[in-house]
Image (tube, rainbow, N blue to C red; front, side):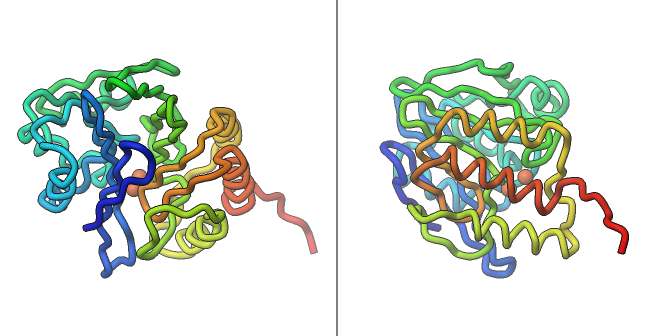
Length: 245
Ligand SMILES: [Fe+2]
Ligand SMILES: [Fe+2]
């Protein structure tokens, strides 16, 4: 487990699992009302908790958020709610009403498109991104002051990667997507008639940091990176017209 401050008050708690050559990254925002984005897997809780403890008292966590209902995103939600009595889950309306409010020991504070909440110095905007990366309930959080996009599985990269990079991550993300499509986890990311439009909406936020769940976070021209990702997803996953020989 490795903890790195990748932007002011934004800590990346990374757990690498060599057996599957994959990092799981959890993001902690240190503020008056601390926020954790991605709870981690249920069985990973002790490691992520140790990571949070290096930065703040875990009992002081106030917000627990994630993109979509999946074990690495929110599996340890109830363990965190036990650990931090003031904490509340935060997610989109669909996530709360379809899954989270049943699964969670505490009802979620849920948001509609573009709604915001503040943790003190930082302000988070919720953007629903249905089926991007996957899941009807998917959404992302955009931190407006530091221009950080907490973008979940987007830009997924295999391997034990450096915490941040200023070099483009699009080739790694492209390679990972191609590999996924040729193995048992094909169809990990669907491609819908709204995929391009959703990614363009995220690009227009002009993020300076892309905080990725699997692989390095990227610091640089986030708009360009998201438009490149849109091109890659269209190429790899988009509809293709069969050409007769
Ligand atoms: Fe996911
Ligand atoms: Fe994930």
